[in-house]
Amino acid sequence: MVALQGFLFLAVAITAILPAPGGTWPTSLAISLALVLVGAAGVLWTGRSLGGSLTPSPVPNGEGMVAAGLYRWMRHPMYTALDLICLGVAVGSGKWTCYVAVAALCAFFEVKTRAEEGYLREAYPGYAQYAARTGKFLPGIGRARASTRLR
Image 1 (cartoon, rainbow, N blue to C red):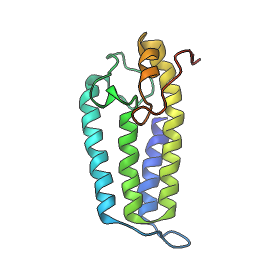
Image 2 (tube, rainbow, N blue to C red):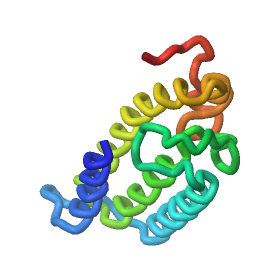
Image 3 (cartoon, rainbow, N blue to C red):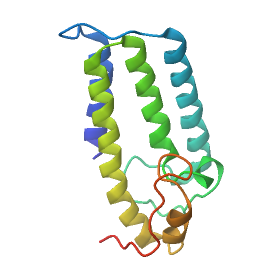
Image 4 (tube, rainbow, N blue to C red):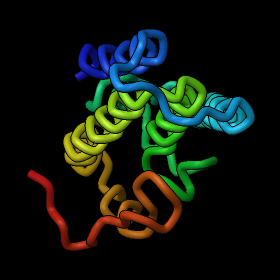
């Protein structure tokens, strides 16, 4: 999964640079920069909150469950922040191919979190309750059902 994630980040960068067949969409430097800066701040904040728990793997490293900082409101704010950075790149490039790469990255994070949450439920007894009260990628949106059991 880590290699695929890296490939998708590379796809966003490459599609932003290469010419897009069929032209481009309108761009906005201000919106692009705002998205990249907000995303970068989110990455830094979540990285600091995670501390030793930070890992690119969906398998927890045993350093403990984090429910502080942005994790108080979202279960996966790091992924949200990374998506914002990549969306900012797409807005700046104006290339539809870059938007497609960002959509693929968002879909990948959805799949990755499904696997990751199964591991988190196994590793941390309080994770199911945390997931039931906390949004997935945005505050209040995508709360897990308390009775949901992942295999």
